[in-house]
Length: 304
Image (tube, rainbow, N blue to C red; front, side, top):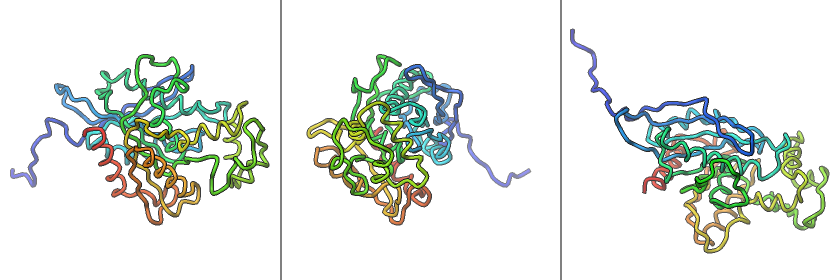
């Protein structure tokens, strides 16, 4: 019988990908799940894949590692391994820099398991959205910084070779044009009422998060430490950055991305700025064209 169609087999499994669950990493005694998506490979092949660690935005609470999973699978089908991670919730008693320490521990964990997962430990990028974008920037600017290093997975680096930030906050001291530095000194406690003057939040959840991020520490010092724009040093050695934001974002002001892009460029770092016209915070910000742009940046940065 004549077939209606004939295809050749796919011995290299090109364009295929697999999802691995039940993987977890630990940081300071707390275990976190991650979801790993890897390109399929012939069992006889020795290929190692560049890795992209992804962190979904959550307002520094509990990232949903499945939110972008359908889109991230396409990255894996095109040859990049993806690890979608989570971190400690600031509202549950985990002040800064807990979320940053967790992200860095995840990177070291994945490097420690590179042989098992067929990852290339020398080609690692970090990609985040919103608060995850804030984390991505901090990760890129503080590779192997002892301030944020924990004993977990000692002997492995938490530096990265590329960073993608989508609409992440970059200057928590000057947000929406409101300068907290004009009101507060470094040791004064911030009241909920004082915070409400500077951060619009109808339901109060974000204020709870900020108070959680502060813990018992100086609010002003924490806000500065979690602001990537102040971590950029002239002449520093940094990976390439891609910063993306929509001009209709009503949660994170576009000025946050512009300020970060200018600061990176003035320091001599490589920074690419992408504007999405009409793009809001998530939602219509995303398109296949935009994902292709991000993939191409990551692929070029990691593969050369």
